[in-house]
Amino acid sequence: MQIFHSISAIQNHLKSLVRQGKTVGFVPTMGALHAGHLALVETAKTNNDIAVCSIFVNPTQFNNAHDLAVYPRTLESDAQLLETVNCDFIFAPNAEEMYPDLPNLKFDFGDLERVMEGEFRPGHFNGVGIVVAKLFHIIKPDRAYFGQKDLQQCAVVRRLIHDLSFDLELIICPTHRETDGLAMSSRNRNLTEEQRNLAPNLYKTMNLAKEKLLAGESVQVVKMFVQKTLSDIQGIDLEYFELSNLDNLKPINEYISGKTAFCIAAFLGKTRLIDNLIF
Ligand code: PAF
Image: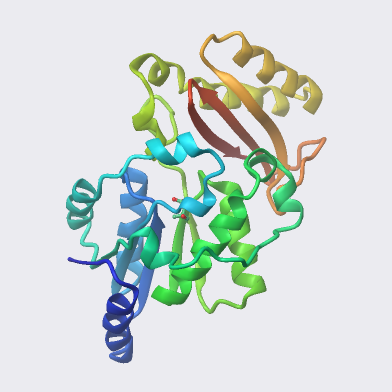
């Protein structure tokens, strides 16, 4: 496995491999890797000749300075983990390499910007759009792998690929969970022991809400149930719980079989976690 820090070095290297007919699977990450990321890389490696993983904590997608400051940076141990899943190349640029000048370009993802992550993290998807577009231009993958945990990000990337005619296939892989149901996330490392014990309540409550909805409770009652359940748990501060149409992530007022997603975001102390459930 080789680590590249410069754009031109990885581009030149990949160009010669692509000329030999090799296909490239790409997993963009911000590092602090967990089993969910490793599963994405394993899938990329199984379905392509070459697996590339990028590790870059992208400043333009953080709307909260504290979140950016405490985001774990663990390149050395990430590289060791990536070796275990036969990743071929890591692309780990620094901020100057990616942004010699801060881009004036702005992405607006329309309705996707106005709900959930778009609403509560203004500018977040602009930053995601810019960095993912740059990474796609640099790596030129045949396939790009993203995790379902970031459901709205997946929708934004799908839109980006469509609108800018990127010639690649988007593969969304299932969320990896700890044994107690907590969705794996790099941010879980920032939880205290007490917060870590509370965190599975997000997934647990969504599952209870799902049972209620399927038993015929109204969306309004189900939403109230989630708000009440989580507000009763000291240490969890619910930011949003939404029922969304899986196709466009617009809020819905009734259950659509196979196309309903519960989406949730909550603070545990200063750590913000998101999760979703599709059914
Ligand atoms: O999901 C992430 O880790 C990031 O948003 C991504 C896609 C690597 C862009 O910085």
